Length: 152
Image (tube, rainbow, N blue to C red; front, side, top):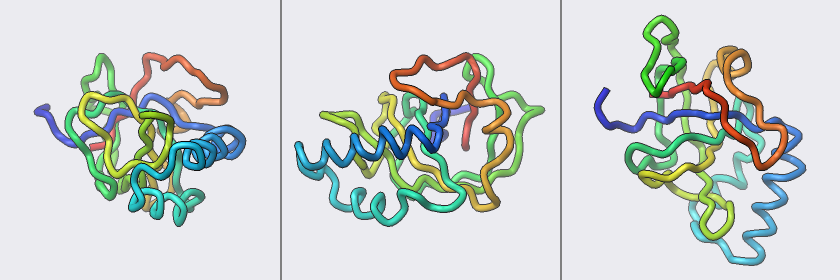
């Protein structure tokens, strides 16, 4: 598969850690460092608790990916290769990315070569494959497991 806008998910953040750690830390970082991306901040504020959405940590981006990126497929991966038998239709959209430089806060894109986080919304509800196969992040820091899911 050629370089593209695919997003390789390592884990999803539990709702508890989103409310108790991620969002409070982002708000603290914004107060301390200022808003890095006003457009992304506005999108984040409107959608931080959007229906049918989850926060994810993902692998490095193969190329720059902008917020609003839409995906139509989801699949399991092994050794960063898509497992053909696992491919499912899954309409989703990246609501916002989160950069870690200097500290985590909303960003308009995932930069090529960077591990970052994202808020993704799913049109038909969150696919069960995410809950069944992907690591649930319940504490920070975390270590990714071997399981990966790809949106493309």
